[in-house]
Structures are given as structure tokens and as C-alpha cells.
Image (cartoon, rainbow, N blue to C red; front, side, top):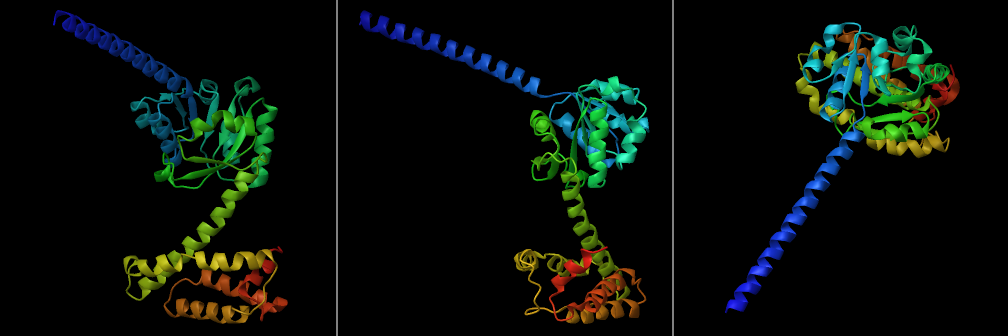
Length: 326
């Protein structure tokens, strides 16, 4: 009985020793993980604190990045500073505070106006991530401008409003040097999912503008419908179910895409002449209601030009041919 007690005591001691060892290993792993995470949280500078820039700076703070901010109107940084951001006293201080510099300004001209007076030393080793809207050509020129000053440049096209920043369900197109993107992808994914599209700095800008040409024309058609509905005593809420269905163009896109790519504009299913008649009915309805008809008149004009170009019996997709010529 005494021997059994001793053996049980030894087993208990060994179990305790093992528990202490495992606890020590676990604590060490936790410390190492924390240290590793901290080293991946690179300092970031955000220049431009409109609604989008503020959302971006906030998302970086939420992920634990040290954030420096700058805006011409300094007071816009107050809320971010209260959350832990550093307010740079000058734009030069902002640029030199971090390797990764995110620009959220109105366009590339605004970038030049903001950064153009800085000496080249301020840019050395920096990565300028320009998430401002502009043309593909201006994005390419901006990348060359940055390179001449010793900085790398990534073009970004953000496909979400400020409310979607910080969500992996949102996305941003990026283009520029692949190794630069790879080095900073983790930080950029604090904002949205990062969708890299290639080396050409103009490509992300092009994809963004393709998105926006569809977004603005579709949304403007909704505003036109709201105005027309209002003239007849209906509210935006009244037509919401109709608008949701009307703006879901999936079946049309899936039908037309392979035909357009094949150059097939045959009018077996729809004809541009019928489309023109329908567009005129829309314009007449708008004018009869006393509502501004600028938008539907432009659609009628486009359809009319297509018919006059010889596409009356072709599909409405033949308008691609009309629009392809300036």
C-alpha cells in the first residue's frame, strides 16, 4: 500500500511538471505570436481626410497600425488623433513618417498640389498608394512622377463607399510593381480585399472607371425614375421593389456578353428600331409629367444615331459599335 501511494505521488508530480512545461511553451508561443503580429503592423500615413480618407485611417487604426495623418484642414484629424493617430505638422512630416503612404484626394492634380513642393529626399524609399480617382493615363503619369523622385507607386481603385472600408466583403483593384504590392498586401487588406491586376499602373484606374461608368449611369437612371414617380405622387419607397428588379441586369449581361465578344449583333431577339421606339416613349412620359428630360433625351439620341448608322434591324447591342467611335 505504501509503494502504491509513492507511485501515485510520482505520477502526480510528473503530470504537474508536464503541465508547467506546456504552460511555459504556450506562453512563449503567445508572446512570439504577439511580437510577430506587431512587426507586421507597419506604420502607415494617410493623406487626405475626407469621408473616405477618414474611414481608411480608422481601418488601419482598428488593425493596430501606427497611423500618421495629414489634411489641409487640420481639424479633420481630431477624431482620429483621439483614437491614437499622430497628426503630422506638415505634409513632409507625414510622408517621411511611414514607408507606406496612402493618398485619398480628389484626383492626381490634387496629389501634385499636395506633394509637388517636397524635395526628392522626402520620397526616397516610400511607397505611394494613390487611391484617388482619375484616368488611366494620369495614373501612369503619376507612377512615372513618383519613380523620378525615388518612390514606388501603386494605383488603387476602391469599389466601395466609406461605409464598406474595413470589410473583407469590399474590394480594391491594385496595379503597379508586383513585388511592391506583395510587400504591402497585408497592410492594404486592412482596408478591403486587395485585388491585384497587373504591372501596368493604369490598369487599376481603367477597371475602376469601367465600374463607375456603369455605376453612375445606372444610379442616375434610378434618380430619373424617382423624379418621374414623384411627379405622379409615388415615393422612392413605393418604387423600391420595381427599381431593385429593373437594375438587376444579370440575365441581360449573361445573354449579351458572348454575343458581343463574337461580334454577333443579329436582331433575332431584339432590334434597335424597337429600342428607339421604347426610348421615345420614356422621353414622352417624362416630358408629359413636367420632369427634366435631359437623360432620356440623350438615350433617344444615341439610339437614333445607331439606327441612322444602319443598325435598325440589328440588336441593341450594336450600340457598342456606335459608342466605339468618338
